[in-house]
Image 1 (tube, one colour):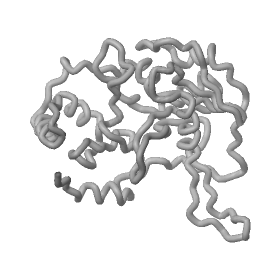
Image 2 (cartoon, rainbow, N blue to C red):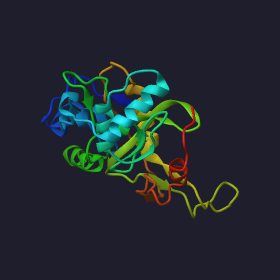
Image 3 (spheres, rainbow, N blue to C red):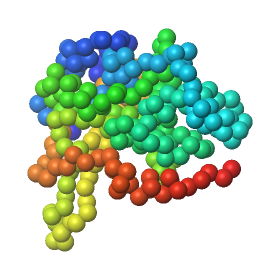
Length: 250
């Protein structure tokens, strides 16, 4: 398996056909997986927001005031309003906004980006990353993973994760197979799309490198069962349920 970036993409503009552009630039072969940063998908889908167009509601103002008190820094209630609109659920409101997006991803501030957003204030995640991945996979005739970066519970630092995918299962399901000693595996489900997203992030990086698309060449899923479950639903998310009962005490 080899990994390479796709060069020469330039700035992506609203309405631009990302699938056509990548088909021209990516040089995709059979068994390749194309990992695309959510940032450029959002730009092509015109997911920009300017704060001057936002009116903060009472809840957003209350959240911003509390965060300002905790951090001793001013907080814009209009930003909190956008987070509320992009979230299906707030798991915590202090000391930061931990949210569940409408498509199930749990992340800080609903994944809203303030960096690499020319001429606008904010960039939202794609509205439906699975649909976006499917459209790109059809255009490229190859599996596609839409990636984002987020922090990890119990660990420092961020890593790449998948928020949308098409053309391959989300996970390898090892249940029913055996280990080297012949013991049957009962709980092992390997999140392949997250692992590939993290691999891509090693090359695409976090700054101004301008390489938001990574091709993973000759990836083999193997003779395993596949699962498309990735995001836990609120009913089975025990950590999320616990956070709903938790109150931050500065």
